Length: 290
Image 1 (spheres, rainbow, N blue to C red):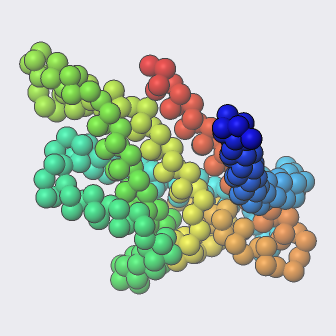
Image 2 (cartoon, helix red, strand yellow):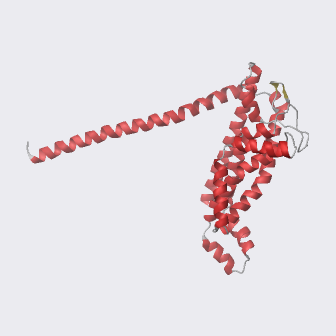
Image 3 (cartoon, rainbow, N blue to C red):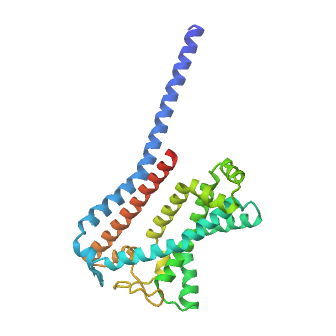
C-alpha cells in the first residue's frame, strides 16, 4: 500500500471513530434531556389534567369546608400574604441593591453581600422555624398574615437586592458622569438616571420574587397556620388560608374531593408562576429592545 493510500485509510478510520463518538455523545445528551424533561412533562400533564377537571364556579366562590368545598379563602389568603410581603420586601430589597451598586465597594458592602448569599442558600423551613420562635412565640402574634408576610419578605429580600445590584451595574458610568456634569445631585443621579435605566432588571427581580412568594409552603406552615374562613383584616392573632397548604395537606386525605382541591390549587399556583415567568421574559425582551 502506498503512503498516500495509508494516510487516506488512517484519516477514514479517524473520521469514523469521530462520527461514532459524536453519535454516542449526542445520544447521551438526548437521554439526559429526556431525563430532565420527562418528569417535568409528566408533572405538568398530571396537574393540568386533574386540576383543570376540578375547576368550577364553586371552586372560586366558596370557602374550604374541612377537606371539601372551594378555594376562595386559600386564593384570597395567598394574595394577601404575597401583596403584603412584596410591599415590605420591594423597598428594602431595591434600596439594598442601590446601596450595594452605588456605595457598596467597602467592607460593609462585602458583609451585606455575604449575608445575602447565606440567606439565599438557607432552607426556607429554617426561616419558618425562626419566624415561629420570634413572631409566634416571643412576640405572641400567633398564626397570622403579618407573621407570614414578614417571613416571606425576609426570604425574597436577598434575591431583590442582588438582582437590583446587577441591574444597576449594567447602567453605563457615562450616564452617571453626564448627570453630574449637568449639576445633578447624587440622589438625583441615582433615582432619576440610574434607577430608570435599570428599570427592566429591577422589575425582573420583583417578578421573580413574586413567583417565589406564591410558591412557598414551609415558612407559612410555621407562621400562617390555616383557616377555612375568609381573612377578616386582622394582621395578628388570626390564621389565614393559602393555596400551598391545600396542596401539601389535602393530597394525603383519603377523599376524592380533597384530592380534587389539591390538584386545583396546584394548577392555580402553576399557572400563576407560569404567567409571572412569561412576564419576566417580556420585560427582559423589552429591556433589550430599548
